[in-house]
Length: 423
Image (cartoon, rainbow, N blue to C red; front, side, top):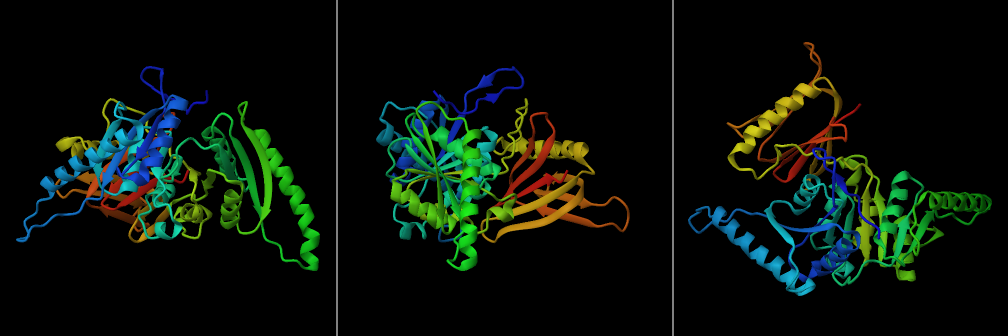
């Protein structure tokens, strides 16, 4: 039986089973995602956890009296009942699953919880079945593919079982090889995985005809090399295909032609800006696919090493004090390291703020509820840059397996800011 990667427990030396995190709105359009997530958890021995995120909006009465707290509680209670009813409808009344209901932006909340819970996979609904309708629906799956640091499985509402026939987008990069391995792990024990490379469309002229055959031979050799690097369990068939055309459309057409129920692809963006380009192959696949789509991130951030004090949103009045201590320690450990600062806002898009500025400090003020980042040179007259963020709801320091800091992640309002290190 194949299994997802178990997570180490540093304080015991043991390991815990993998976690699959599913985002649901409790409606029928995420029923397929629940069926597939439950089947995946059962097949791999993973724990399935459900979460639902309510897009919070201020509620005003006729006299402009704010009733946000009471209305938020009512919405959470209603949503929890809807999710519990969905569990009973899809998996049966005897099914018992962990359900968490939060407020905020769904994509950001799910991405943050996936990091905090050390999830191995995120499962969400793909949206409305008809492509024309989905273009005007919310696109949580697309937003997650842009920002998530773990694989995202987007499942259509009518999906019933684990995929059996997968098509993988192969461009011979390392991330596409990982997408192929992920597809192999996602299909059933008797599944089929096709590695598909889409060759550039060549115009039929005297010069292009001479170049076609060498490229095709090279592509076949590269596909064979990728196949040799994969771990393929007994019973799963892996085949190779080379097509010509535009990558996204050729993949969608081929998947439909062969009746594939899974398309797997890597998200090539190194940072927020690259991941949010609307012309990307991944975006076109998510908006055009009618079968399950698996996206594998190129640059997954390592999960935090658990500590005795978990610094995250939702711990009550002591959280701002914890953030102050967290940022003071972060500054002490990393002052002088060169940084990359990226900001992602779902309303105005992604923005690269700076590259290669040394870290001067990071602090949180409980008095005005703002987090400040100070970057620049220590000497007088040097370059300096500061960023001040209000409405902070989460602060995460992400570390590698050795306990070294690799990033500071701040969620504030409808945006998030990521500070990574250039070296």
